[in-house]
Image 1 (cartoon, rainbow, N blue to C red):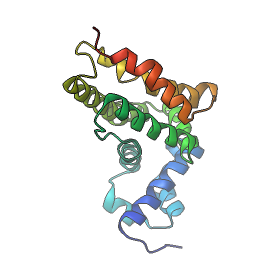
Image 2 (tube, one colour):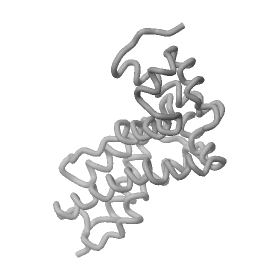
Image 3 (cartoon, rainbow, N blue to C red):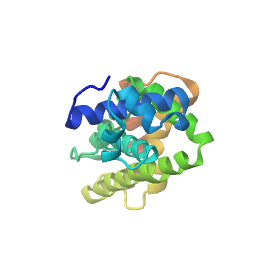
Image 4 (cartoon, rainbow, N blue to C red):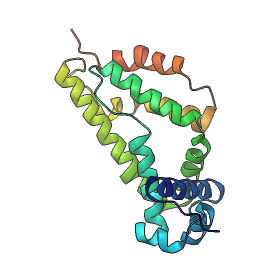
Length: 191
């Protein structure tokens, strides 16, 4: 049965269906027919928005990367990183955590999905982190010679490791400890 929805409500239902299918069956399970059925809409509705299931999946992953994790200027590097890592922690401990693990696992088997993740999702996040660090340099709370390629991944890598490998808790105490004991000292200007 097709359910009448419009705008953001319909888009959210479609994206949720695509992610659920991905988590359960990998990229091959994300077909336009399966998504339409799971979202209780029609294939023409999907094709008006996306030309194919790969594009739908890529756009869905980009929405998560761009909306779930804040990147606003809080006025300090420490504040920016607390907000950012708290966003990651909420994502990794919320209902989408299993889906994210499924996406990463599926990307091992699907080079096209892996390339989409690297280029579009991770590439976007790297650019955002580089901009965050540049703001810190301009404010003077990040040293000019900070190795950006390391600093932009340092805090997130701990959270990803806990999500995908160890299963250790991801909580606010961890976020604050990462920021105060690792990230701020790593980027702080040297006397």
